Length: 216
Image (cartoon, rainbow, N blue to C red):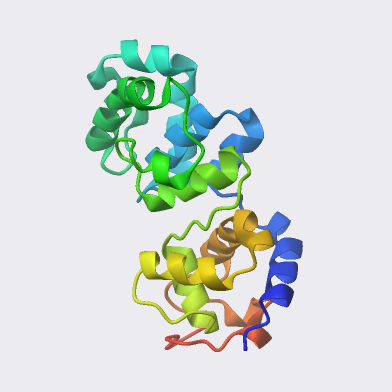
């Protein structure tokens, strides 16, 4: 049985040594759910450094939904380029002010079920916004969380949605808001997709290395 308490404790200790995922970085800088939402939308399939630079450019021009409503979509595209799928993300962002006003009286909702009603917001983004912007329990599963929890042998799932549902049942709720943060940083720096750094892994003794064909 996987000792998730020890794993979480070790990752919490080691986390300050690693790069901070961009959504947490934005939250620390701004504490603003609006900015966390936009950064999280931009971060899908985009490197954190690219997202952080795009967010910095964007927030100089766009500080709230009124600014977002006024800015032309082509200018928005230029500001967030080269984030992945920047044209689609710009279109979705332009829809946000009206949808948030219509459905949620102009306030960003704080539940996963409501957030997924927003354009360009899937479950991963919604969970991350709930955890980071509102500091509420949410299980955000991206490729890192899905891969690492399966490598550890903590879950046995085929895709991120299955992993989210399995973790909701199994992972103690006290770890929900921080689990994604620690595992993303861990996955970017140590437990990388191909040939992970098992030789310098702080939780190696707890890992069953399921699916790991080669390591360093």
